[in-house]
Length: 509
Image 1 (cartoon, rainbow, N blue to C red):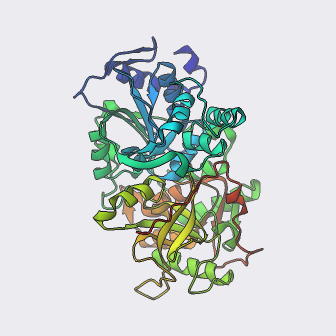
Image 2 (tube, rainbow, N blue to C red):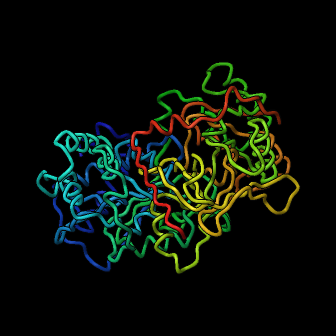
Image 3 (spheres, rainbow, N blue to C red):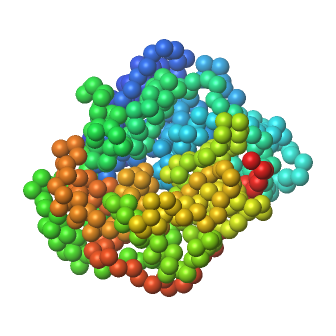
């Protein structure tokens, strides 16, 4: 793999070669670009593990590129073309919309684990455009669409590999070309799963039922899923199926945020020593900020990361108070976190529709205003390929020292939401923001308690996960104070999103 060796480090190249050998054993030869039909019944699982900055995502992208060059078809959550007889397929998955969007920014056509289970049903007229964009058909002539519109769709697809995004660039709405959703009937072939440290045992078993060949990418220093005793799903794999990467790539950019994250591996490091490191780093580099207060302006797009629920609730209520939010309604621009769907079984079709569009548990959402019917909300799902959706909503605002949340408004049933100005570090896994505020007093409490998880002090695991959520700037907040906002909440940046799909379907539930 001479071409690959030019871009990969030694440990990545070794992992690439080992995975290439695994793929060869299941009929996908990357060296000779030779594909043979899948061997039904033979299951293969492997993992690529490494801490932040070790190059897991780069390796994943290189493997995807090599599989595409070998003739493997990419299966996405937004469109699945006609399956070629004896063809080989690959799906690239992530547990959350945000994690999938990070991969898509790198040109990898990723989707969520949930969405790959369901496939959209396209109107036959527009399915011809999708087949053409995917390289499986001739350029179509479609009534109502000009050559310029089709050119815009083709240019968009070259950059983003999103069929709905390309059709939106041509001037279409999601309701024009997607007529419904159906559960996947047939199993898939090869699956790559990013952020696999977030998988619980049930999700892992579901993926094993869908894919014959499964490759997990994960960070062993992350927090394990709740109720799994600190264990990750890849910990159970035999040693020969686990390929570990070392920290090299992002370190070359002299990233002080990653320096701090990796310093936590020192077993002798104490909390007060670490805070001194943060302070020294902040003096040298403005990408690290030793903050004396929480910056409320940042909370509308990137939540404050906390350990304790009580801290989360206090910060949320402080955010609403400084913005003058009334008790009985939400302000346009307030952040929400989807807490699931409260729909009976008879509304299964509506559930599939909402989940497929990104309203899954943990999704970060921005409130855009009330819908056209009582109880409905217009929403922007952060990281989703088709972010605009309108849905019956049940919004819960938790109050300090109150057992039951306050519900400013609600439909009888629908998508449930908690406020998203602050979230726990556990729920932040799989997401990444340019600016991240970490509420250090909470981590100090964890350090004082002396709790240990998977053989490591809990405060270090919490700090590692929280710090590595920041791509550009880390705010290490040391005091329980909140700044005043510099202006009202806005949504103009969301309306200027590159894929402005207006998926307005407010059918009564």
